[in-house]
Length: 450
Image (cartoon, rainbow, N blue to C red; front, top):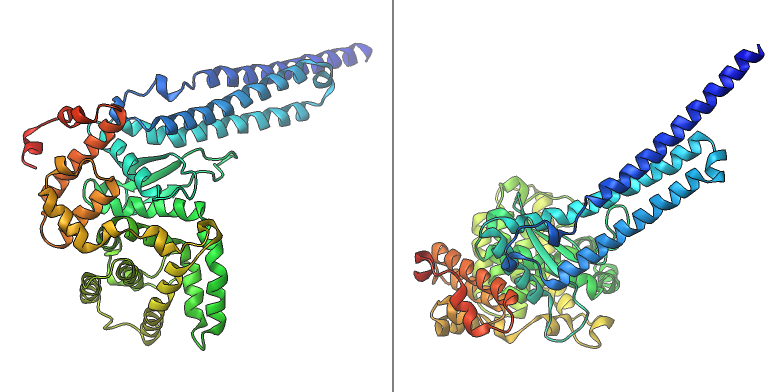
């Protein structure tokens, strides 16, 4: 019996040693695989003009390096514990629990790496990568207001399927923890390249800008007062409150690129009638039919011109209210009747972050008045080489206005924007050589016809 007990004890010790050795080997394997994760600067094959801005690259690499450094520290700490007296006395379940925590942290680091890898890898695509570099320049310009109301974070763009855009805002929590060092904007590939890309892109920029200015919380109190005072229609102001984030982003887009924003929005929400009139009170997006009407109203308030009423009438012609239920029709008419008051409230709002200035004063610009955009297009003669020194958001506003006026074909617009995006990407790469950058942009036959 004593011999059997001795054998069993020896077997148990052997099994424990094997179990602890497996955990040690797996932990070291995590460290080995972690060393295989190289900085993007050492593995991406993009041309310099396709690369994100130095600020964005630095912020991303610093963030990821810090995450890998912390994980290595955790692995080393675990191995010291495992091979030390406490680890040797601990139960196998406790050793396994600590290892599981390490493995989860390892997968988090890889997941965060993949978030940025999806963005960076596209930069190696021929032509598309350089255009993405140009979109980065457009996004940065759309986020930077005339006065420095905030410290704008770096912005990087990438393409994906679908007809809508999205943003992972800077300074928000990433999956697994940690603060996102850059704003990442996903834009729909089906909009490359037309002025509609600016509508989607600048809308997402608007989400970042609204967050930096703390606009949603600051507007909720005045909205609540309107809701309390609205006799029988308080629910309408409750809807505006629910839709506030998306409306603010639409407002940013209209303010920065003019009618191009509303036309682009129409392109996104031009869906079968059932979807355009779909009422979902849980959706943070306005009902598509009324959303276009709100965009037109904001455009007319910022940049008064008959074009906005014509555009709203055109939208009604595409989607007449005929055949709607009485309840849906009544809701849309109630919301539409309150839109002018809501837009006034929105543009006259003076949050603390703007130090006494109204939102309309800060976002609006005389350069975006329709007649001014028309004159600029005439002065430039529709030649991208004459547009290249203007702010990218202004250029997209001018081109969008020309499209709205019927002065620019989609084919020529696409060629112009392809040349301009390439130019802006190259200009931000070859800094200090402005006079020669335009000569470096490929002068293919297609570009020569622009």
